[in-house]
Length: 166
Length: 425
Image (tube, rainbow over all chains, first blue to last red; front, side, top):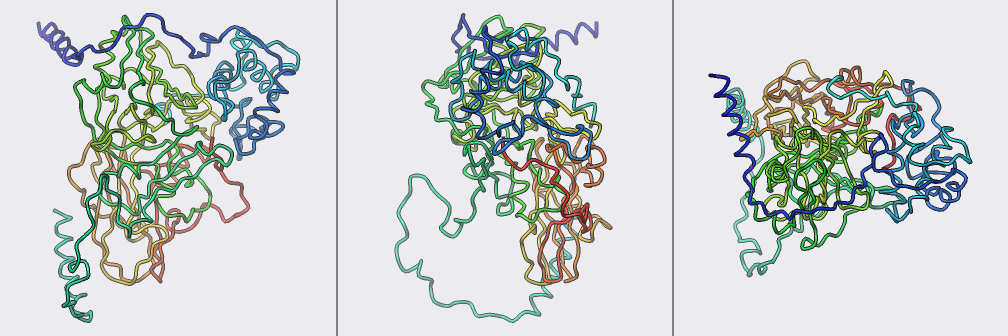
């Protein structure tokens, strides 16, 4: 009996939360472009690091440096030493847990002066080149959604929930 | 009660000090301002011409001027509410210009009804106000350096501000979209040039998430998310997505750049803390603070701010002798949950060099750690979530300097590399 009463009270409580005037317009088709670690959201397309090299020089080098060592932007490649060492440097190769996230960042936010301007093939080629700088793909390897999804990033298991480390 | 006794004691001491001083004559003639009409009315008020130095301090990437932060001048302010023009900023690629008549919020994903809301529609929803702090996860990060930085307090710790935010409870809008029961996360996305997006647990969104439209009574400032931003009280600034355009209901986090590469804290083990959403208990003495000068021995009002993302501030203790003794400061009422809390305590400086410290405790029982405790627990390379006790040394001449602990740096090796990144990204 007590349990039943409790259930009713809980239901009533959530109902009071849901009172809204319902002014939203129902929409049917929604473009989806969030990229998940399992590759969901990655578009069709492909590119190689060799193609990406030219794009990198054009769009990225001035801030990230010729070898990704960093300039006005932080280093993205070339870290020496372990993350547990005395002077760790976080780069894509030693820190980023998921390759699809790299594609996502390049596509949505890079280059900073013209975000969102890269076509899917260009973004794949740039992703390939940045992964090449980490020695994670070959210069002429075709990189596409499947390759990014299956690429095991070195630091994939490098994260713990904050609550576990107060 | 303790605070009141101290104030009484102060009165007696103050009187003594007054008696010892030389009496000066009251100016008998009326000042010029009483002999001519004042200035006319203004459409939108601005600070006095004598307060022009009270500004934010912008710092940005040299190649991307919209990637950086501007620091709230906490050391020049009082009370708990941050004036809108002085609220801290952290943007990744500038402040977008958004026409509110065309801006829409989309709620979609694992919902029974995908909905789009125009701003003018949200303005007609039942509104709620919440006074709470907002703090960047990178606030105070210069304190990870091995040597104490001597910049003014606001330029080191000023990526925290406090406002009355008014808007639509997120739970109301989510309920209208009818999420599926497996939908434990939301992806929130902004309409800025970084297309900022982060994952937010549905539990927090429903608990006290707010779709904010107003800040301190007026519509949001552009640099604070106009026309619509997310407010998640007590949570790391980056999750309070500005210029909010999209909420996607999902069953797992998206693992965005800003919840993997950035806004995670590298630990000594080489692992990193992820989804470190809640801002830890923290306090900061602002009067006096680094770079200020006490004109001489005598009475001073110590004043500062405390806050915690885990609840209300239960108490703030101050030490005026380098941590040997601690006294409870008076907390300005009302003390609100997840809100800046002003603390004050009168202090008589005897003219001898000493070290001032403040230490906050919150209603969850969390106590602000000493610097060495924080470093022992999280190492030196976490970059985010620095919240240790701050120490100010008062010198013989009344000069106030930043020190670690009771006055020495962590390391006397000035050639040691910096522990934090110096650029903005």
